[in-house]
Every structure is written in C-alpha cells, then in structure tokens.
Length: 327
Image (cartoon, rainbow, N blue to C red; front, top):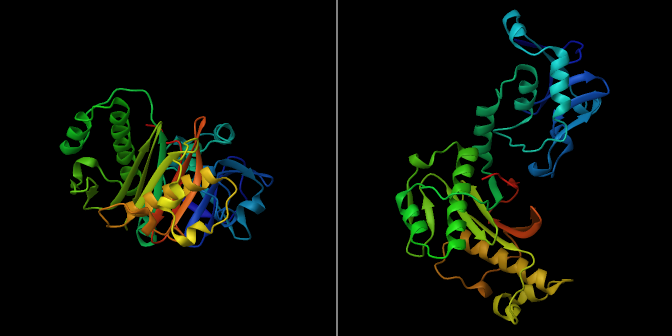
C-alpha cells in the first residue's frame, strides 16, 4: 500500500497531514467526505464525547492542506470491500459516537469501512505524544443492573464483600470496573499487572499512575493521569444542607456571583472534594481549600439524570472526558 497525491474516486480512503499526525476519511465526492469528527483544526475545545462520524466537503476536510489517497497493492485490493460497499458502510455510521484518540479514532473508522479491520497505524505515535502531554482523562458511567463478580486485587474484593449496604456495595464494585476500563483504554494496563495499595486514610493508589474514584447514587466516575488528580461526582438534584456556605467557602469564594445558591454550593462542594483528592492532606477541611484555580466543574447527563462533575489537577489543558461508558 502507498499514499499518492492523485484524484480520489468514490470509496477511496483519503488522509490529510495535521502537524505530526494524519486525519482520515472516506471520499465519495468533492461535496461528501465522511470522517470520524471534523478536521482537528476545526474542533479546538470540542470534547471527544461530542465527536461523531460526520460529513463535510473536501475543502473542509483538507483545511488548506494536501490530499493523499490510499493506493492498495494487488493482494490488499482482493481482500478489501468494494467501493460501493465502503460507501454504504461509511454512510451507515454517520452520527455514531464513541471517539477515543487511541482506541477508536478517524483512522480506525476509515480502515473499518475499507478493510473491515479496526486498525490505526498511528496508535504508538499517539501513545508517545500522550505520554509527553500528560493528559487527564475522566470516565463517567451509569451503574447498571448486573451480577457482582470478583475483582483484582484481593484487598479490593475483600472491601467490596465486607460492604453491608447493598447500594454502596454496587457503587464500589462498578467504580472499580470503570477503573479497569480506564486503565486499559488510557494506558493499556491490565489490573493483574498493577501494584495497588490502600493508605491509612483509605485511599487506593497504584505505582504505575495516579487515579481518583467517585461514586454516588446511580453513577460512578474515574480520573486517570500521570500526575496527581482528583474527581468528584454528585447528582444535581441533591439539596445541600442549610448553612453549608459558612462551613465550606473561603472569604474569596463567598463573593462569587451566583443565580442558584443550591447549584452553586453543590458545585463548590464537588470542586473541593476533587481538589482534596488530588492533594496529599489526610483531613478534609473545605474552608482551607480554594477552588478558584486548579479545578474544573461541569454538568454531565447520564441517562435521564444530570450530575455535577469536578476534576482537579495541576494542568487541565489536556482534560478529556468520556461520558456514558458501558459497564
């Protein structure tokens, strides 16, 4: 297989160079190129959770750069889909989400349409780039109905088994299952290969990376990073206790404007919890924790319920949030 600067035909896999990497799509005509998310130059600030298989014209696909066409050799041509079938597959996936830069990106999509193989030649390069960027990745999921099965390590399994409250037991189980997914997707780690421990305050850690857990009624959240990180998740319909403002706000935070006092205090509580988890203090003292910097909060919708999500880390420039992960 080679890549050539020639006129593409319907059903061809095409690409355009964006910095050190490539953006891929399926060419149908100059007015119709199907790709997983638009050209990266056009989606600055757009979270991965909002990326979907979409259609643009060829000019928007290229953004002023040069187009290259995949030219298969004779053996590859015999194995791949016909141009008509490739176009049918690409069109059938318009609107599909689930983008992940390492495991389900635009090259995976284009290769699946043409060859049926879920493959990206850029994965290793992306892994190295991610290691240098030190991104914070957050995974959020609904707690499903289902059987609780053994988890690793044995100490976590013991903690789950000894939890008497059934609701909390399921939360602890599924937040750990979400951690398993997060570590695999972000770093390709297997739970059996990691060294977990639990400190005197009850916080779980592992030697290979940093992570933070949060579970609440109906949902769980996990943050993973190469640097200290904290995450907290709460339902937005939760009513805060009277007098909470005096108990948790710093003097500077008391002067912040707000339209909804309950929503504001819930957001501040989540932010302080997240920042506490990212720090090294043993005792949670919210009035001593300022969340004017180093933390980001937003609302996420999981099913029919909205949640307040807070993430704390030294650098949130490369924050990525993946919502509604299937457990």
